[in-house]
Length: 369
Image (cartoon, rainbow, N blue to C red; front, side):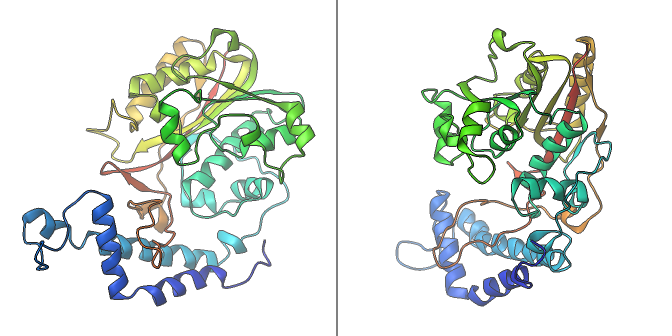
């Protein structure tokens, strides 16, 4: 990957700037406002809308565009230096770093330990928290001695992850789970290609041969709020990636983690990533399709796990000091409101969710013996 077209990253920003003409930005604004169900910028007679809501929102799309473009300019500077992106070196061996529960940071994306797992998964180390989540989960499992032939792993809400194929390719026995297809909650995830309905949809031929995958990976529907008792005590490790913030409430999310550990054999490892509100105190989102955790919630989780005889590895709440640790991406994240002017791909280590600044946090739990 190091020999990839040099300047490819910098060309992204140049092409975006070349296309950023005023008429097209206006078209983007129109489409975003319409799709979000907001007022038009124009009154029925073609004159500018003067109501307070339209006045407040008419520049919104242009401001979002500028935010994303400036974020991209920051990221492509680091890509050009080879710290991440398509020109970054991907180490050939894993590096033990004493990983603990922690927040996603720019330094992690640029680290040897995370870029090694990007090479293993054949993905580019972009400044994306989803890339970080893959690296965090695999690093935690590797340091915990779980990436060994014959180990038994359980994945929750696997969606369309690469993880099951990668693990199966290492001769690990994987039970991949997701909501049942007939569960109405699965429809929303299916619409965004984030739901697994069958084993076949999890196969990644670039990571594992079909026959090895079928020999090592199974699929069954599982509701994270009702883990079947027959799964208890059966696995060496379990994992989930940004899933338990979607189970209904903060309380249900904490109980999911606690219940997931019951699926482990003594000494097993649970690795879960989720959303953390960077406003670490005060109000946060609860009782909603996406809830936002704060350190106090993980402190409570640690107490509950300790009472059950397990250990949540200490949470490092250092949010990092890099520029991209302070850049907050804004929605729309996947909406492309105009075919001639797609939103640029901004760095995505931080984002807003319902108005709160958020990042990914990874939790590592050791099951008691």
